Image (cartoon, rainbow, N blue to C red; front, side, top):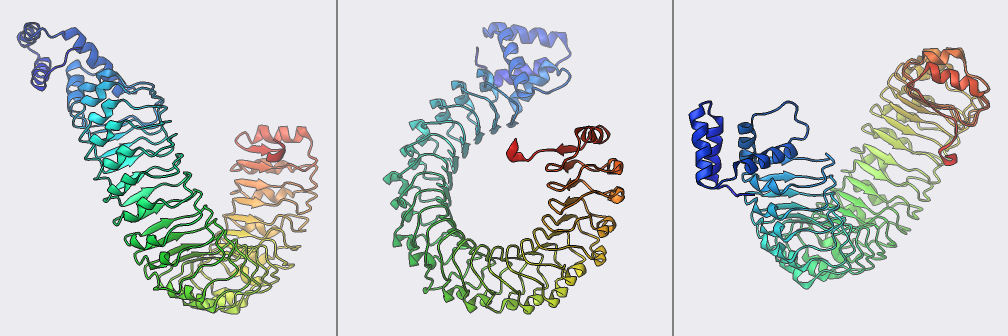
Length: 567
């Protein structure tokens, strides 16, 4: 194929736009005098345009197509099942941004190297397996995305992309970090997660402008020494590796604002971590940490700390020094008590104490007046402190799987509560205060010992989701018929013998679960629930013909007759 200069192309576009036969004739003579294969050029334009706009309806004029090709600056062809890039792509001389993510492209033509105006190239999620050296001729690139391309290596010439400030090589098959990437001194964002890296080359320390680095889901067992030299690094993700330890040199990384070391094999955290005064988020969950010492200058900017799924038997009283903390999770540890200094975390909006062995909340929880979400699931609590009623900003409260028999009367002040989970406790009667939560949208009461739901529940006009499974109710509580917003209800295992025809009044019902009861029939009125889209009936001796009839009359409703475990 012949290569036109920009001037030749411009002249041809102008001539083809003309309605005058004389100009068109002159254009053809010009093409012939310069030995330009006009027919091949036109065929190239048609092919390239069709590739660029596969869904275009109607037929554009040739001149319009040529002008579009030569002036196109941004082309996005995501998720279209494209299998190739045509060699004619070289004609997109004005192109600055090319996005081809989530296609089926296996080969990139060498001609891509002629797109000298290109600054951003996105090739993610294509089965490329290898890259042509021509990619390395795109010296104006500042962003290159190659994640999920089944790559085993990167061309050495990538070092020529000296303007690159963002590179994504995540989720590939590389075992060794490409040393030539270390020559890209302008990189600020590097994403290399989900490969098979065990070490980083010494030259990695040359990437002194890095601000964001993601090395998660690799195979590092030792914290890479080169990272300690990255004094401008603000975001570091090393979760899901095999790290056992790291050096006190981490204190050099004073620009860090986000550090994730979760899902490793750490048993100890160097005290120097708590000298990183710019740190805002610290994630240490799913390690083997037994103790956290914070007897050093406090992390005055730390807003999020996650220590869940470790082996902590106590929290240091110095945790109270983290006075900007907004989110704290210490779930799935071995805590039996809490330091009273926890009450000093007055900026907390989310506190997760779940899956420990707490018998009481032995701190002045009412000081945490900004708390919006509290979880104490799976502890050994027999009561909740009356002072919790002062948490009038609380929106989400999870207290399931404890030993509670009642809720404090002061809970009447929780006038912003949207979700309450008291499942798997020892309630034999619904606490009357629950009927005052007029903002409640989600209520989970399952696996208690309730035999009825009080008529006062009618006050819960905003309730959308209700679960009462595993309580010996024996019938569908009449008050449910008066909850006009109710759309998801779980009535599994409540010893139901029949469903009342009054169910027809539950017009807003979208999902209804009646699993593992003693139902041998359903009322014909169930077909009046025209909004119903899911109905669970497994574990009931209902005849097949009844199911078939309901299905025919509620064609938009999916009916489940066996558990997912059974296939």
